[in-house]
Image 1: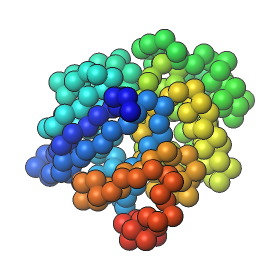
Image 2: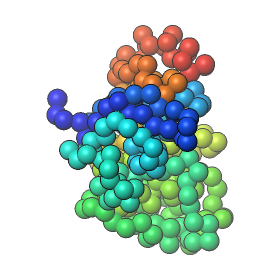
Image 3: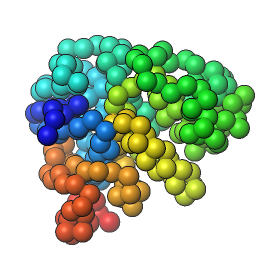
Length: 234
């Protein structure tokens, strides 16, 4: 197998004196969609934030596309080709949809054009002149994803993209992730909706108390269900 696009080894992270991650190891290969599973508060979002460089109190190794990312400042992490869509989305409320889309810089070739984005997200095309304050939660989530896809990222970090959204919007986001996979975009996803994750992910890592306790491909889901029910409390 080829070298992973993202390789994380012995990643530890702290919030102040609180030790949040305890030696996370994971690999993600180009074109994969990988999901981090686990209960609330076990370190899934912290893992994304530490990979991105938002959490600076961290140790271990993070290699992306062959580059050592541990000493890279946050803005350079984005320029390296890693995009982060946080759960809170970060939409600029007073700007229109189209103005929000034009804000992030293009960091590399291969980013989607505005027309491609509107084809992928017809919901926000209809609202292109609407300010962020007028968008529904689902429309804000689509805009947050679309804004990053315009930049030409190689790896998309998605934190709870379906949280609190209507089923029809959840279904659309699933369809978007399938399309992104066809385009070769790599995705690392934190998701509480296990049914949704099982339809879009190639592989899973199970996180508990800041550690990876299991990892497996989607084809092994049936024999892992007992463990997952215990780990996820479902």
